[in-house]
Length: 79
Image (tube, rainbow, N blue to C red):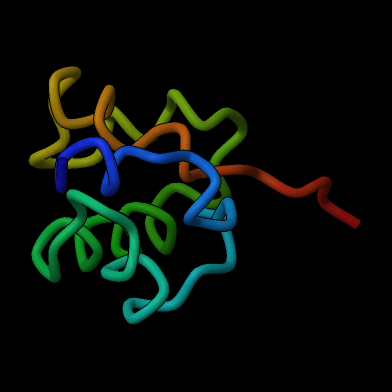
């Protein structure tokens, strides 16, 4: 079924939320342009995310949404 296909972890590479462009964020299931823009604005205002869970501080991201897409996110080590 299509929902299981969309939720399949192996279909998507993990996206670094500290370096992702708007287009890369929108490519993540359950993240639209509005949310992607808010993620980028939050990053510009507050600096890089320390943990993936910190993304829940972004305007418009609730725990229910976070549960749908967190497995597609990562944070790479800062150099």
